[in-house]
Length: 82
Image (cartoon, rainbow, N blue to C red; front, side):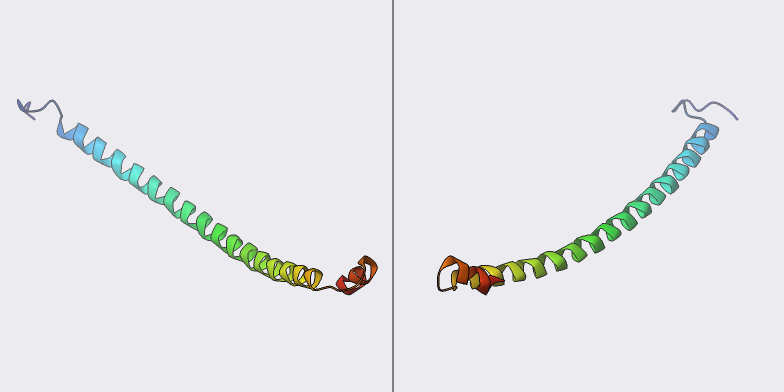
């Protein structure tokens, strides 16, 4: 093949570069799929934690409310809270 006066790249170099890019794209796509799966699993954990945190918050507010509304001396208030 004759030398191209407009570029120093040969068809072989361009072909090799293209093949390398295709491999890099496949590798990157695989990495992105793994990251997507990891993020989805993390989101499930986050939602699970949020459910427990909300239930705990509700329970804690109930305790706080009962403490604020308790009458009597400290011993009676303690029995009410228990």
